[in-house]
Image 1 (cartoon, chains in turn purple, orange):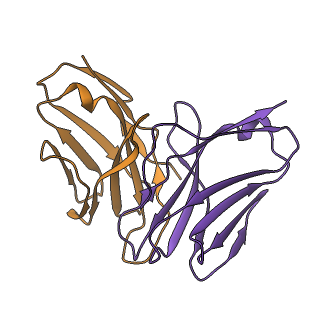
Image 2 (cartoon, chains in turn yellow, red; image 1 turned 90 degrees about the vertical axis):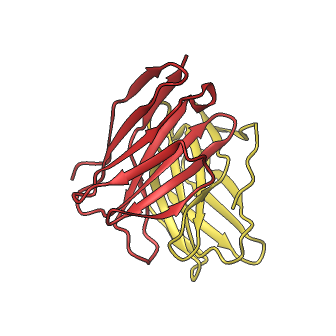
Image 3 (spheres, chains in turn purple, yellow; image 1 turned 30 degrees about the vertical axis):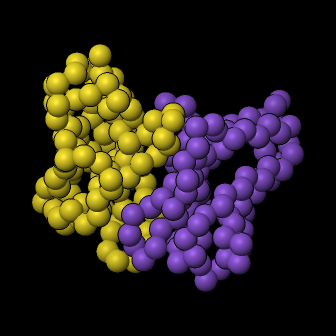
Length: 111
Length: 114
């Protein structure tokens, strides 16, 4: 699972630029990963998922990359828009057991 | 298709009281998980129910309990409330089963303890 920190990492990007949000996980047996977006006052919203038998998966304006060797997950957002401003969480699980969530990264898009 | 519905959205309680939170999952989803979210600790797993049985449990004291009904709706109960229980309580549902499936969250119940 993820270690929990007291401070939320932050990322500021200009509107139109690409954003990359990173996540490290510790369990080499983790076989399923999800990225969530959480806006203020709302619950986490599913963005994209990836299984451990894949290295890359693309959605609409988003790409998730999985590097199992170094236990690293990243979310790439293309042409970042003001509506992308939110906190982004990665989540991992093993064999359908409980999910472990990262501490989150706060993304701010500058118009 | 309606999303995950949590009620109430906001609750104010005092220390020592108990509280019950409700969650209606997405239609057809049989797994319901509960999480506590605080600024300092992030999202922490409380428990998961599948087909009315608790399938997984996190590291929370016995004051936190839950149940699931035959229609997959779930309730979470916290007894003898403490100041530290102030948090956003989130419910997530998924199809369930043993294969990995995405969880979909409700907007939570904001619990404040005075």
